[in-house]
Image 1: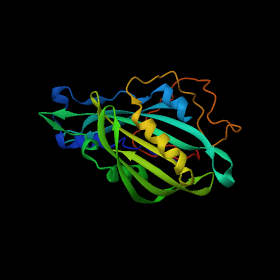
Image 2: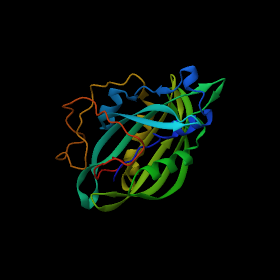
Image 3: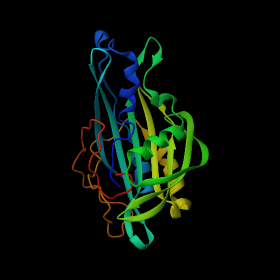
Length: 256
């Protein structure tokens, strides 16, 4: 599934309403901080931290074509699971996204803050090629960073190694993470709901802003791991990429 930039342009789009005044008050650059999942929960659930991506969006807004820069972060976790006829593949994914809060005179200009899970799901679906037939299923409550929010489960169909796979997609509505907004996304083959849904919830409830940036294995992709529950965390450091909101190359993994 080829990846574009989930949520990356949302904050920049919201800033357009400020026209050309941001630069005058020193608010033309905005950056979030990365977040991740506590190490004990990653180990217990079998999800490896694969990488941390810096996603930069630059837009010209207002009558003076002022350039606004918004830096978001995406921390990706993967797990090898039984994909049926496809064998054992990295087909379960958990993503933590952070985007900066941008406030002026008590008004928040990052629209992610007010987006429902359905609206966030629409962003996810529009930013990943090969994810389709998405329908809302159920809503639940979940506690992330000690804040109660909504976790919504959607059903859909994703392309994996050229095959169509029925998937569950879990999306949490935004919570505050310091000066940022945080959203999490979990995806796995629907046939594994009985075991992976509880693990996705555990990952959401163990999200932390104290992310271990050196824990990333950098081993992303659709290759299996030889039957192990998770890959060997031999760590090459962070994945850091920039984007202007255009489609970027990806691999054939789910939500990668």
